[in-house]
Amino acid sequence: MGLLSSLPHHRRGALSGGGWQWSFLDVVWGVFLIAVVVFLALVFTLRRGDPVLTAASVARAGGGGGAVPPCAASEVDLLPCEDPRRSSRLSREMNYYRERHCPARGEALACLVPPPRGYRVPVPWPESLHKIWHDNMPYGKIAERKGHQGWMKHEGSHFIFPGGGTMFPDGAEQYIEKLSQYVPLKTGVVRTGLDMGCGVASLGGFLLKENIMTLSFAPRDSHKSQIQFALERGIPSFLLMLGTRRLPFPAQSFDFVHCSRCLIPFTAYNGSYLIEADRLLRPGGYLIISGPPVRWKNQEKEWDELQAMAGALCYKLITVDGNTAIWKKPAEASCLPNQNGFGLDLCSTNDDPDEAWYFKLNKCVSKVSVSEEIAIGSVPRWPDRLSKPSARASVINNGASLFQADSQKWARRVSYYKKSLGVKLGSTHIRNVMDMNAFFGGFAAAIVSDPVWVMNVVPAQKPLTLGVIYDRGLIGVYHDWCEPFSTYPRTYDLIHAAAIDSLISDPISGTSRCDLFNVMLEMDRILRPEGTAVIRASPDVVDKAAQIARSIRWKAQVHDSEPESGSTEKILVATKTFWKLPLTSQ
Image (cartoon, rainbow, N blue to C red; front, side, top):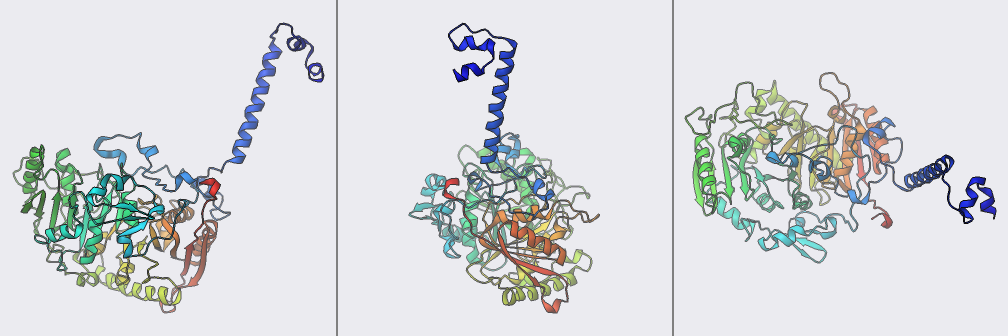
């Protein structure tokens, strides 16, 4: 009776057995109760869930003002610019949807990407070439689909890599011996290579034994994690798709370009993809295609077109060995214009062949002014080319002197890092290295004798010096550090950033284009647990970086720069801590 008596008089009959009589007040009362229930449900849901923070909201709050929360367990492989949740809504034409498509500035998640359950410090190089921990990337699809071709297989707590590939199931070493009959892979003449659609990059891994630095790339596709496997193995690799844009590399830089069943339709779209391969290939370099369409059943038309188009570019067909075709690019200036059935012609003088950051593919052939000086045979053999400025360096004002000064400067600095700052270069702790602001590649050259490889990044808004880096036998990419990098989480052991503030500032106005917090959060995403970050900058910038480092769970120390430099720069050396999500979150 207590509940009944508390109700309004006109509603008591409904609960005491009489017929229900709806009124306007009944409706109002019901809507009010529903609104209260929904409100309380929302309040308790938000209080129980993790806050959804964006980089913009944290940066506005001061960056390092508080601890940055972990991402959800579902984000262990977060790829901000290759996210299928975004790309699945985009056009399939020329594989546009598989290219980079980043979140709008400020909309990227501002959280720390956790390692997967069971993650361990990676197997050290060179053992990692042959096996990695299964739980570091517990994805068995490739092993199931490609195990019979020697790609990889699951054995106990490891994935094992026999070294095979679709077109070389008996192993990369035998395939390399086959290629060596036609391409000088063992004499130092050939040093840099591009492997398109590389799978788990076994070819690039085994070419390292020949002192050949191959940059292997593949997209995030149905295999999902092939580049992730390659980087876990310690092989130079990059997440990338040849679609509607130029690849982010300078012109005429690779000594060979290789495709092993990469399924790139080279002659489609008016030959755009073969033209892009030509832009990247050094004069006198080698184009190697294994698999379709080379002598492939039901692809006779495509094979004929590929031969004809390569001929129109004056490439010399060296051999067709089974399903492998090898061409040599002419070392002299392009033979175009000529009479050909494909409409191939030289680009206008306004075309800069080194422009390759979000640059649409051209349907014309690029011309480089110093092509003959940087051709195979003109560039010194490895390792001599590492220490000699190329013709491209000389094109830059006072370039040869800058090249030598840069090399000497970084030799001194690296020695200081090792002897005085405790950076473990030269040990098994560091294999995959990134230089975020590479210029001429002096830092990479200074550690070339260590068991590492270096991804040299030349910021896209700075002078385009990446061609000089390739001329000296090193590798790298263009990138804008106001965007996430195209790699999986936990893929680099050491990240080096000199003048880190210049990566986010406008080169003309000097104003900031994005926040330092964004850049360091991205560094954290791609750095392995227990990995090292080295940041050089002015004292005030390093002080801010130290605050951010604490907010993202790094252990950081600030040091003076090397005494002989006379610089006022400070150096932050930080270690990413190995933390894990609580078991209830996984």
